[in-house]
Length: 126
Image (cartoon, rainbow, N blue to C red; front, side):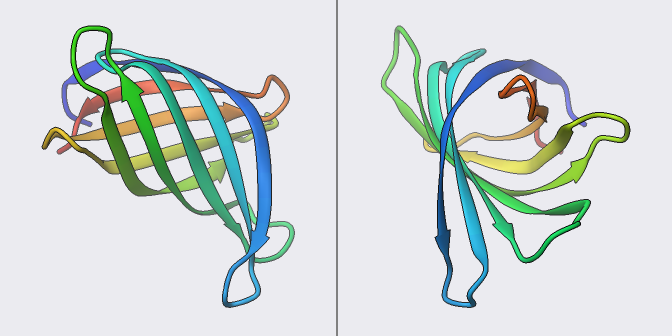
């Protein structure tokens, strides 16, 4: 992981479920909170759910940040999730999160399914 550039603290605000063209159910989890350097952040994490009993899978993030003293930014990236052993939580890693201002950063955090929070760290992409 590259040098740390901050943290994020997001609250889960709800889900939407659809089926994709392959018939796989996709959960779209919406979040709202704060992130270092991005101010207020709102976004959606998509989780394809091909069956039951999986302990890992793919995901993607699409969102928008509203820094207090600069224009808003958008962000998107592909990542992975995996169950956290002994907890009702998923570890989520997005190694290459593209920001509309030209930066690329790494996001790594934990989605606590009981608390309905998604908190983690932002770092330089390596």
